[in-house]
Image 1 (cartoon, rainbow, N blue to C red):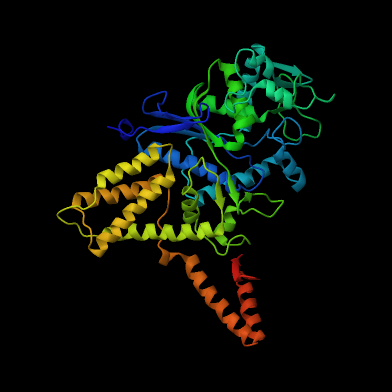
Image 2: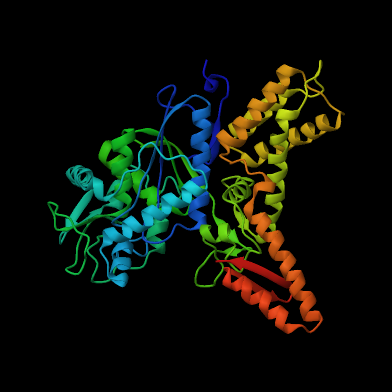
Length: 493
């Protein structure tokens, strides 16, 4: 019997605003689509957190015995600067600025995306399609929507007619908006726009002469709308109706709202049963933004080369930190939070590494089966990783009690504890076992902290020659000392 027959998941469905019992369309099979990156720059940490949430969901569904087809796309065309229907294509703009081909931009940042996710120990999706690889499918959907009278063509561009669609289907059902409010809050169209109404969105855009990325279509040489690509790829690989669609909270409107409307218009049915949205990542209590300097790249976490953190952290520590918050909660990324997570992570790993040395006894003083079910209950409750982690630390406490001789487990219960903790820590949460004593960054930190102390003593003794020598030798080795009001910290290059 598969585990999914006795472990029943409840998922918070953004469509209904409630937790619902998960029932897949086909028993034993799950179709899941997650909106992937637009590959015009390095993947940022907020993206990583969203993808990590769905990596854990993918892992847990597989653990329960479901056969999961997980589709996560690559947006390599059609995503304009302001997420609307005007402006320059983000990839084309990057190519123009760097004087390279757009597909060089795509290749560079797709490789970066994969490298970062590999460091965080992500499972690859079942299918990773690209927008440019599905132009034909997108054109066919546009034809279908035009034939049904729910889109219109003007000067080589095709727009979805939101007001016409809203006559029979509610536009705004996911984001809980109505067309009347959208109309009230919209600015009047200027004389340059081809749209009938401000709410309408592009299915196909005619390319201006300077636009590099363009494909032939029945209406013009142009490119597809950003929203359309996900409808084309999700329905191709998962069918006209599938189980789960995920993404960041920022995609709920207009991107996912437009996906629903396009699919309903084309296929006559609601495309997705469960809509899931991961919340945002902030930093030091503020929105991450390059313009203010309040941001950090994933690679900077691994090197420590960022003024917002005092040392480097392993990918598993950073992963553990992010999973200590529920995917629907805002997560504040701070140096102190990382430091606390590092301590907790190694405490967990130390307990796991001690399991093989534990001796069994004739009786058990801890109900392992009850504890195991608590771990499942946490994940069954909308994939609640922080509650799961709290349960894991309950086991850590018990392991330490066994080591001290104040608790005991029978051999069968000890085997069950080992298998369960390995399943949830490594298979479901996707952590990697790193012993603190083997953590190279910790060894480096200890050595550098000693040199910082020696440098402080040299400065106190007015031996500035030695102080400068320590600083310069460390800089030559790629370690930068940063003197501040609260003392000296270091970063590595």
